Length: 410
Image (cartoon, rainbow, N blue to C red; front, side):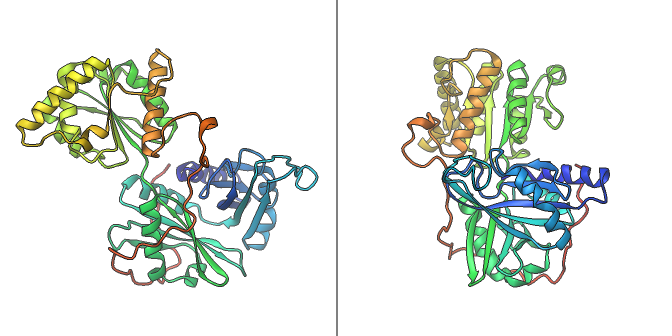
């Protein structure tokens, strides 16, 4: 999935710079075989053939998609595009990519970019949600619905008239299934109508404990990946001195007994990782004791194997005193020493190894060499089994065309 914030910013900038030039949005809705990008990837172009943001391939399709935007914008009708890259296509498409796959795209006029900023806001709230695209044989299709929250009845934002082709009663279990699997999916709801459901999976939240120079490298790499990054330390002067990108949160935790309170006020779900980087035993021990019982996805400790063993022993004793024995599940989320075995020793190399390990853990991958992987590189769930239990109450149909509030300035 291409970051909605990047697309929204680019669309806003294009509107301000060239208000008379229409915009179009391409969405990769299906892939057969191998593909550089996966379903949900998006590309923003304009009617004069400019590629503004995003990507739907490794670079071989963007120019052709942009060239087709003028017709889509002129007619106001979406177009379904299919690129077969399984053979030597130099004589057919002029690409010669030999990507061994087929890419199916929807190219639609983008008359209002605000829904993309709102979708990013839904992701950041970490409460679940989905973007629904209706693929219609007669009109091509359109991005029609934004669902804000699926763990409660949620709120539907209707973005296009084609949303009337599908009832919210049909969409809600589909959205819940996509959220449960974390994969975009297609589902046929009629002979000539298919819906493409993209879950708004929460970004990875990384909490770096310890504001040393290593934390700077962690924060920069994670920020580039679009993660939500917080650097925490009990030393305010050190927090103020670190050089990190805009958008990184610095948080002063005054005392060790405030660790638990700080964690409860930050994301602490399965998409959250904590990296203990302080190099101070008592600090790391307090944070380890507080983080292990939480439903986090990852806890990493910087330092030697012996130091890590001592920290675990100390945390285990502290947890036992609190009546919470250290379980196998708690140990499973603990990575100490932190990082993959990449061989680098600089702060940036260590940060790269740790961020790579977190990425692998969050995707459930072993972090090996792709050349040695025997199964397909990309994990897809094109038609997952629909969930039939624990379905949230059906939300009434929304008669509005668009009720999105103005998003904050990107």
